[in-house]
Structures are given as structure tokens and as C-alpha cells.
Image 1 (cartoon, rainbow, N blue to C red):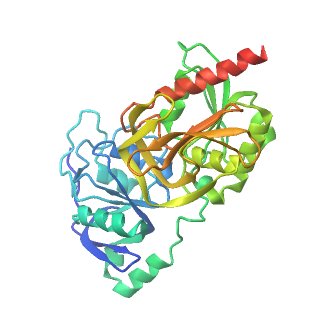
Image 2 (image 1 turned 120 degrees about the horizontal axis):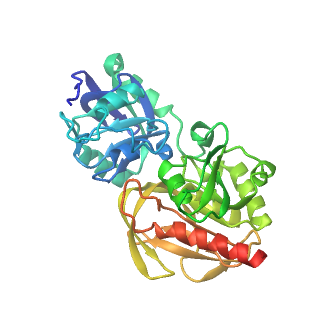
Image 3 (image 1 turned 45 degrees about the horizontal axis):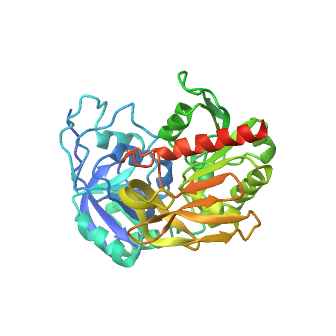
Length: 385
């Protein structure tokens, strides 16, 4: 299987005026978004289909991308979500027996504008120094636009801060995945879909949950109608400070005493529900090689990340929830920059992590967290009985 390479010129324009010329890759046209880099050397299909990347132009730091093509088994959602795609050297030949099509064909199919043939290392170093910023990819007729016009388009694009993108990625109606037949059934689990990945659903079903994936605008009454034994908030794109309705729903969940587990965006929303603040990271954590310390066990995990915002909380000791939910502690920290990577409430059944325990793609060091949630739900059931 070969790839149909574009020869059309393309240009990446960053909001600070820097420009990088290359070749068109994927669909032709114009796209804008926040330019971020992902450090995974494998797993580009899972990255592209992760809804958390909505609104972002993703740069792959691995230089050679596309060699295993795209297949029908590994997508994490119903489509490619990235706003644009930047690679250095796209593979000319697809070499994997599972491949159904080439990566560039998939990008064209989903209308994703990309660029190849640029110095991705230089762009990554620039972002690490200056911080994530808006950018645009221009190819086809758009590549011939005047430099000033291209820059104007980029600078008029919305910033990620203040954006609520949950409605763009969430399901329109509830979807149910039954618990795995061989797993002892626990009960119904309400999953708020803020950009959930299929591997997360599969991991929850493997623990005995009937997984009810609910639209992001569900009410507490609609959530309770599922008769859930617990509630799960997924990963997702956007600024947690712009998700007040999701925070209000979570506070209602906590007031009901329902066991709660949140990942990524869900961690940020738990922080805000507890009364903590969130802030935007300079260039975020994205990739499958982030070292995180689990303070409960003392173990260091290599974990999969995709987040541009984080929770602000005391790193050491217990502290009182400003919103009255009792004692809280930071359970996990990133060993690269000491960013909060997990929260645990000590007086209510709730915890969260900032990363992706389903690890698709990525190492499976953190998969135990699904077991920890299952055990918490079972303990709550025993107390009620």
C-alpha cells in the first residue's frame, strides 16, 4: 500500500509571525488552532482520534509518521479530531498487515489539513520556549495568500483559554456498552462524555460496569435516572474554567454521595468542584512518556498525557476543600515539573488523575486505577448493605 503524496506547497504560520514552509499533507485548504506537540513515537492513530485534541493543530515530534497506516480496530472515537497535523517525514509505504488505508488518505477523508517536510524539531523548541500559540496551515490556493493576510487569519482565531468544546465532541444521545460477559457485574456506571475514548469504555466494561455514556449537557435528574453505582468524567478538550455547568453537575453528584472517578479534563473539573483553581500550562503535557509519582504507593509510572490546563493545589499534606467536601490531598505529581497529576478526597468517595490510565497509545503502568475505582464502588455498596 502506497501513499499519494502532495506536491502542493504549504506553510505553517504561528501567531508571533514565524513561518515554516513545507508540502501539503492530507486535505488542501486552511485550518487554524492551537499548535501543540505530542512526543509519542507510536500511536499516531490513537492521537488523531482522541477528542481531547479538538481545536488543536498537533505536531508529531517523532520524525517518521504513517508507516503503519490506519486500521479499523484502533480508532478511539468516530473520527479524526485534530484541527490540523504537522509531520516531518511521512511514510511513502504502509507496512502493516492490519492497515486498511494510508494515513494521508484518512486525513483527506476527514478533511484534515496538514503539512509535512518542515523542521518539526525547530518548531517544538520554539513552542517550548515561547509557549503554545495559535497557528494556521495554508495549502492549495490558501498558500498563495499574502503573508499579512495569513497572519491576520491566525490572530483572529479563538484562543484555547475560555473555550468550551465539550458540545462539539460529546455524543448526542446516551449510548450503552454492556459489562464484559466474563466480568462479575457491578451495576450501571454513568460516564459524562466530554471526549471519552473507546479504550476507556472498554476498560470500564472489563471491570463489570454497564457503561452508560451520557451527553455532556445531561442534568442530575437524567443522570440519576440511569441508577448509577458511580460516575465517571472523561477526558476532553477546552478550558475547565469555561465548563461551569459540568462543575455544577459534579457538585450535585458529590452531594449525592455517588463514587466518582475523573481523568484528564475530569481531574480539572473535580478540582474546580472541590473549590480549587485551574491554570493554563505554558506548553502542556502531550505524549506517552510522562513520569508521574503515585504518592500513595511511592511508585513511579510512565504515563500517557494530553492536557494544556492543570489544577492548582498544595502538593504536600492534607487540606480542606474550599467548597466543603472535607479533606483532600494531591495523590500524584509529575516528576518533570511538579504539576498536580491527581486528587483524592479523603471524606467522600472521589478521586481523579490528570493523565490517561487507558493508555491508548502508551504504557499500561496506570491501568490499576480502573481497579481502584471498581474497588471503591464495591466498598460503597458494602457499606450501604
